[in-house]
Image (cartoon, rainbow, N blue to C red; front, side):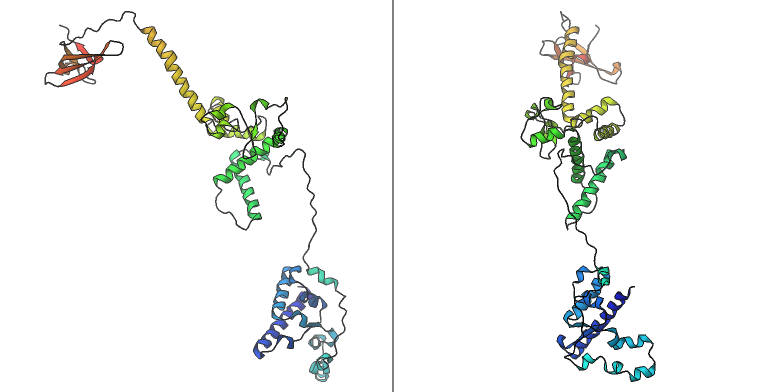
Length: 395
């Protein structure tokens, strides 16, 4: 505790005493006069408390709230009766001291004031001032317009962790800028923003010129390596693939996936993420999820449509040819006719338990061949069965 701070605490006690006297005796504020023998404390009381450090600022604020700073004056130490007991005075000296019993002369002579040099400010005053510095910021446009990454991807092995750390950093920055603080677990939107951030960083590092030209309303150069993709900037300011898929029924992201380079750390981590997602099933399975999204991933619906078209082609081209290859040129007419007595086959039952029946009517198919018939049993029940379950009696 420095001496100026101790003297300031003494001034706080004096201000509290003066306030209690004014409240108890119902005195006016102008009737109270305060003195201090510390020029440093007097300077603090008469200045703004916000300029001082926390310890001094709190006590100066209390003094200014209890008393009027204009009622404070300076008194020299040799005329301050409060200093006499601290100087080793004897009892005889105190009993004979006019200063101890009557106080300084300025109390008995109102017109007499203490001569002080107001322009003289002790150097110790600046010790308790808040340190401040002037910061000069020069903004310059970067010709490459590349965003500096907030993380080094080489220090991470999992893409999911990169997204989460980036989302936490972005939340911290947002909370520092606004009074409304976001709390709780990360949301899906925050993780998606983190994903878009890394896509943007990767695109700027690899396709900086291709991003600047569309922003300026210019077309890509003929030697541009992604010119055939007809790239454009979407609503997220990310480079997306153009083309004729916009006429399809796919979603917007399926029609226009994001463009990513193949030899960048983020692209490698993205492929590794989808490779582990399919349980290391191999390059053929990893390729599917990485071809749909960001020109590498998630075109699942499109793949399903391709699989369905493969089945249709197989049914149309293979099965039909297979059927024609095994078709007889002279099909044999069925020996069944109305009135025949037949056995009605049943699954999972012995042949000797099959019922006998009489064919009532035959039903041909589109090719004219009989495919089913109606059979009446001995109990009078009329059943309709395919000819594969009808067996002629060997009579």
